[in-house]
Image (cartoon, rainbow, N blue to C red; front, side, top):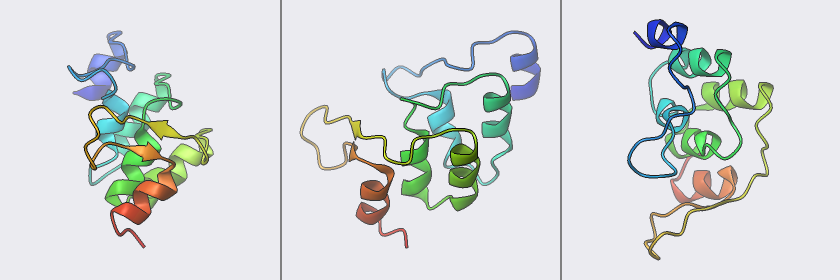
Length: 103
């Protein structure tokens, strides 16, 4: 279905109702990177999508490898401290991996 919608011209850089929550970011927690690859093949923007940070949070090494091969910046700093909540994302993918106990 995702491939079908992309082939029909849907914007792969769309966002959910939360401004920073991209479609690409949501793919990091999926059991297979295939949907993420489909979005990337249709020019989904990696930078600023939080997808590498999400992959780190979920321990998805397979997704992180693909993202890095596709140009993700391993040192990109995410600063989404929306309300001071400790679950807000602040730091690099490494910060997120450590915070979520992902060896």
